[in-house]
Length: 429
Image (tube, rainbow, N blue to C red; front, side, top):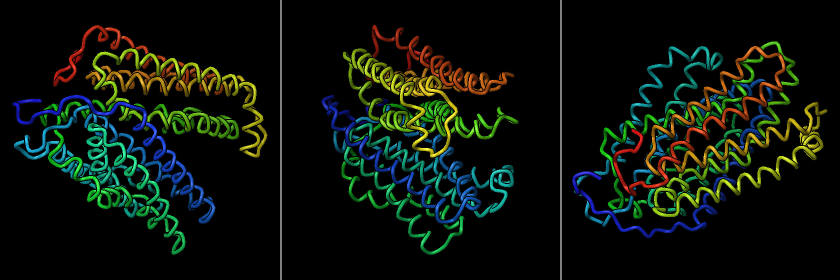
């Protein structure tokens, strides 16, 4: 904090498992709602219109994934203060409003460069819900980061759950009136601003005048730029990997590519999405645990590795039968491949945990570098001229997160001996 403009509240906020339980429960609800949205649209509008809807869905969540870096830095920087001790307006609020406006303008202004390639059928009709949804998500990310920073778990769970449920209700209601893809796109985008407006009267008392951030506007912007770089890199490893697989596998057996994408999606989604949803919670834990953060990190990693070994063994043994039952189609991938995919999911989850530890201890550059190197490793390996697509996928999904983990581990090892609890500068700038 600079200038002594606000007085922080002494440490002592809850670091128990209750917050994690609430966040995971809300994430499960939102995840189920998201799956139901995509399933309903496919079943009701048909495959061809669904393809247009799916492109919009993927595009808005790719942008949201990149902007989630805002939430991570606001989480790290936010701490509670004595009510009335802050003499000026909330910097995080001003930052969120400013960036929201910038995102809206940049999305619309840049649309002529990409609209025909991304939305060839609906064109500008889909640019507007994308721009509004992305701009509103900046406010969601800023508010969520603030809530994470002061351990307002109940409010956070409400924010996560209501966003997903609102989207399901709006899309479901819209499908009863029309199959128009533009109308459905607005139903996808509007829950971002609606969730903030609906919940603000409930949660404002816990944050207004009670929080501050430990960096100035310029440092906050620089830190957010780096966490957003990491967020984009995360998307390459997770949500954008099927796209990368398709681009680097031209001419490959379409059925095999589809089976790989389906298998990766089902093996990665449950664990990786859950752990990534807990990143804000974990960042707070690593920030607040002055003495015991190393032991906390080791316990988490041990639990992941032990659970991963059990799940990988189950994937080897039961994977083909389970996937055949779920997909209703013949399975060509062996149990060994499925075990590798499960193991790679554990490694990505571990990278999310190590990233939370690095960011929670103030290592913005190491945090973004770890994710960036993992993303680059993924792209390089997938681009290698190797005809065996299964080998390329298995190698990329295993090696890439290991590269990121090694980067984070190197920084954490150098920091474990001593680290200031609250600082606006970094050990690694």
